[in-house]
Image 1 (cartoon, one colour):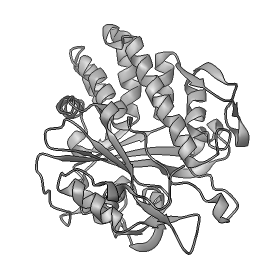
Image 2 (spheres, one colour):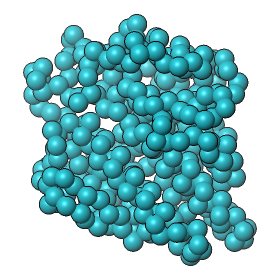
Image 3 (cartoon, one colour):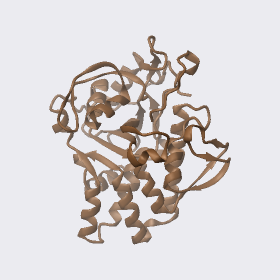
Image 4 (cartoon, helix red, strand yellow):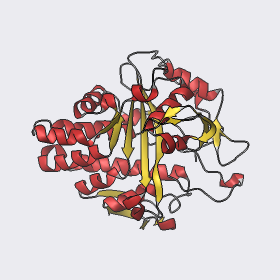
Length: 355
């Protein structure tokens, strides 16, 4: 998301964000289970759904200068949530802003054996050093120091985000999955709506959604407004918004289960069609069968026990509205994941607190 507070005093510092712990399950498990079930309905269906998925060849885009895998059986997946406010999407929010932004970034580490997972969220306002990259058109993007993490996606695309994370962490990223939030609109409408419950009203500030406290059935358009809401709910921070996104995604998963889509081929196709339209993956996951196989290999991971960690950060001394990577905590965190070891408590201590 792109909203920024106008004040620059320490009391108005924007709080770093944490990604939703269940994004990976929504993206990989739910979608892949849905598309697996349509495998028997014919080649045209398979070809159509397969064609919905966009993919990027990471090896070609990044080159050979990448970290080596330390533990072959472990997997590291970069999950990106992107959002565009351009064109027709501007009608769903306030203002027309060109391009798309990386709204959420999590490096999900699945240890060898795949019985658990650790998700490390990277606050979007973290000042980082961007490496030299190739953008989606193959043009060279020069390196730069002290740029916001989420600006990497806007300028150079997902492959450059992968390269940036690899250089930050020293960890080889095996796969990436990007979810377009606007794509959820079609998925919600295919479900006939999603039910959410608020314990306090949503005010509709800055053109957002206005809802009373209680239970509401949201259509696709209102659902997109719901996950974009920031100033109209809670403390107005990005952390509050990501909490709404978590709530919405879990409500959507519950709706899919409740409707027993696997037993209704027509509804199943509509859901799979809408779900695959919102995905971009690396080329190794860029097909229905590859997504389904990977999801099946992760069936032992319980999202309810997934450990969620925010990358340790500290407020920047020059710009208090930005954060920088905190040391030595970050180095300890990355090293533990690289070696497929338990993350020590000392590596979770972030000087800048989220919320």
